[in-house]
Length: 399
Image 1 (cartoon, helix red, strand yellow):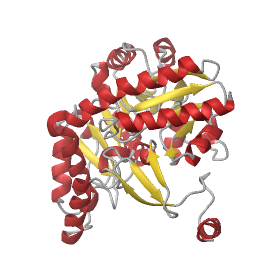
Image 2: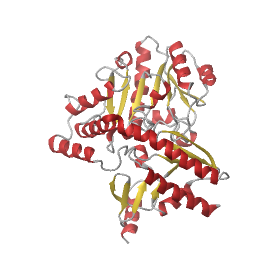
Image 3: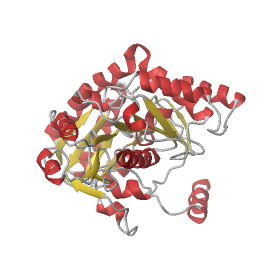
Image 4: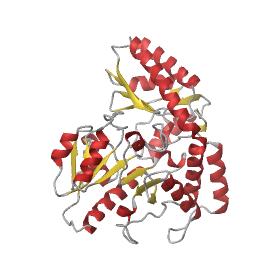
C-alpha cells in the first residue's frame, strides 16, 4: 500500500516528464541503493553518471555537513571561498584559465553558447553567430541547448527553435569542413556521444577538428558534461585526443551528487564576458562548491580512482565481449572508454532494463537499443561479475 501511495501522489503532484520505474529509492552507499521496501540494488546508472564516487561518499558527506553548518548560500555579489578553491582546482588541472559556475550541464552549455557569440562580436564580427553541432548529440533541455542537440525527437513540439545552429554527422571531418561559412563562430561537440548511443570518434578526429577551427579562427567547445570528471579514465576526455578546447562544459560528476555545472575557458575567450553579461543566482554557491572540492580532491588523490577506472574498463569490456560471443544474434557491438560503456543490441532494450531491475541491478538504455553502463568509479570486479551474470540470465530467457 505504501508504494501505491507514492505512485499515486507522484502522479497527482509531479509533472509527467519522466518514464519512471516502479521503485522508490530511499538510501544509498557506495555501489548500492535500497528501495523503500528494503530491496537492495547494484547501481550501474549512478544518477546518470553523476555519483562518480558512489552514493554518499564519506568525504563528500562530511564536506557538505561542515559547509552547511558554516554557510549555505550567499550572492555572487561577494567573494565565496569554496568557489575560489574549486575554480583553482579546475584551472590547475585543465587547459583553462577561468571558470564560470552554474547549476547543470544545460546551463553550462547555454553559457558556452553565449560566450562564443559574445567573443565573435567583440572580434568585430556582428554576423558571426552560428554554431555547428553533431547529429545524435545531446546538450541539454533548455531552449538553446535543445536546439544545439542534434536529435529531432527532443526538439519536437518546442518550435520555433533558436536560430543559428547547423548539424553535421559526428566523426566526419569532411562534412564539418563543407559546413563552414563566415557566419560560424564555434563548433560544439561531445568527445563521446553518451545519450546518442555511446559513439566514439576515430583517434585523429578531434585533432582534425582542432586544426580546422584554428585554420578558420573558430572556437572549439567541448561538452564534457557526461565525459568529464574521470568518467573516461582521464580527468577530462579531451586528454585522450591530445588537444585543448577553447571552452569546455562540465557538470554531472563534478559535485559528487549535488547540482553544479561549470564552463571553463581560456583567458582570451573568457575576457569577452564582463560584469552584467551573464550570471547565475545559485551558481557556485558555498555548499555545492564544498562538495565539488571534496570530489575533485578525492579523484586526484594519488590517481587511484582514475587508474581504477582504466583497470575496470579492461575487465568490464572483456566480460561484455564474453556475452557478445555467447549471444551474437542479440549483441551487435560493445564500445566505450573508461566507465562509459555501451552494448548495442539488435532489438529494443527497455525490457532488458526492466528484467535487470527485477533481479536487483539498475542499468540504462539510450537511443532505444544501446544498454549504457555508467557506474561509479569505485566499481569492482565482483559487482561487474554480478551484473554480467544477471545479463546472461536475462539473455538466456529471451533466446
